[in-house]
Each structure stands twice: as structure tokens, then as C-alpha cells.
Length: 290
Image 1 (tube, rainbow, N blue to C red):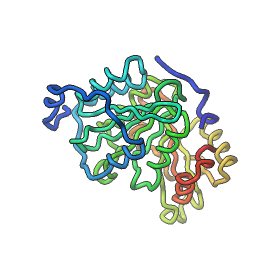
Image 2: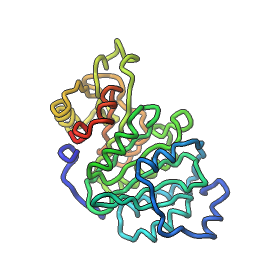
Image 3: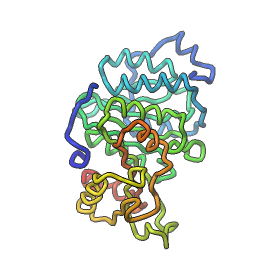
């Protein structure tokens, strides 16, 4: 991934469901032991429903994402602050590094999503999977890319798309995370993974395409062509760019793309993949590395 998204860098640049008072009274739990990132995601996606988030909580969450991505303070302080919005920060130890996982507290499953932040130096890259589940394998691919590469952060849905479509809703933690990432990494990249059904696209401009790339606009930058050419060579797949080569799957109504554009941030890359390609990427570390 590093070849496509720039050199490694380190940039410093109510709860409203009625139980926040309990957290405020009892305070944070220190020394939280975390499962693996994969297990944390699987646990978080079991059951649960979507509860809309207040504007006050979203502002607080955005500030906490900024502080966590900036890493200008210690884990204990951040753990304490995340509990005030019903979330918890856990340390996930890898072979040679540490990830911070952020999830809802165990008593809550209200669709806030889960997030991971690489501690220390990393690429200014975030990987998002807002439709994992509905878009089969995208969650697993994003998790493995996060674990195997050097992306700074990742974000995953925790409730099904029919309960909350995080790629199209405005007032969500997904949006708070996206806004915070853009603030901390103004030249960073957000790679958002999706899936499409080739059989449902027969006769349309997608055709036999295996990957559709877009940046959520009808006037993509030259970088989109560069990425497409690199991936065609590295993966030996049929790739089309929106809107020059296909009129489908352009992400023009994507909430994260619209948000980033409103902030003057040009780092959004929307990746639509056929199920065959997703299955390959889910299984094959060499193809993920490419």
C-alpha cells in the first residue's frame, strides 16, 4: 500500500441513552485487556441496533478521535476520556507494535462502530469498511490490511447496513472519525472498501469489471489514473475509473466523500470490488500486499 499512498510519516499537527452518569461516577477501567482486532470486530457485530447520536456527543467524539490520532498524551488519559461517551480504548499488542482499539462498552451495542489506531509512526492512511457484512469480505480485508501494513487507522461498521448505512448517514461516529482524520492528516488518504455484484451489473457500463475506482466526484484527479494503472499491473485485474470508463458506482452521494470535499480534503479513494476479487484478497496476503 505504501507505494500508492505516499511515504511513511508521523503527523502531529449524550451518550444520550441514559447511562452516561454511571460511567462518570465510576470512572475508567484501567489496564483493559483486549482481544485481537479481528475478534473485537466479530464480537462487536453480534446483535445490536442503531441509536442516533446527539450533536454534543459527536463533537466530543470528534475531539477524542483527534486526540487519539495525534497521540500527544498517554493511553491512561485517553482511556479515561473515552469512557465519558460510553466507549473504551484497549491496547492490542502485535509482534513489534501496538494498536489501540476503540469500541463501545460491553453493555452497549448502538452502532457506533469500532476503530483502530496504530501507535507511533505510520502512513497517513485510514482504511474504512462501512458495509462489511453486506459487502462480503470487506471487513476482513480492511482488518488484515490494517494488521499487515502501516496504515495509521481503520474504521468498521458494527450494525448491518439496513439498520444504519454508515456510508450515507451524516450524524455518526464514522463521520466524526473521518472529520478528525482529515484534521490531523490534511494530506492523508482514506481508502474505503466496498463490494458489488457483477451479475446485477450485466449490460451496464461496469460490464466485466473487477474493480471500480472513484473519488466521489465527476472530476477525479490524475492520481486516480495512477492508482488504477498500478493496480492493473500488480493484481492483473480489469479496473475502470469513474466517470471516464464507467458511469456506475461513483460514490457521488457517499457521506464521507461529501464531508471531505466540504473540508477541502482531496484524499478520498472509493474502491468497489467484485466478489471474486474480494474473496482473493481476503485469503491471499500476497495480493493484499500488492
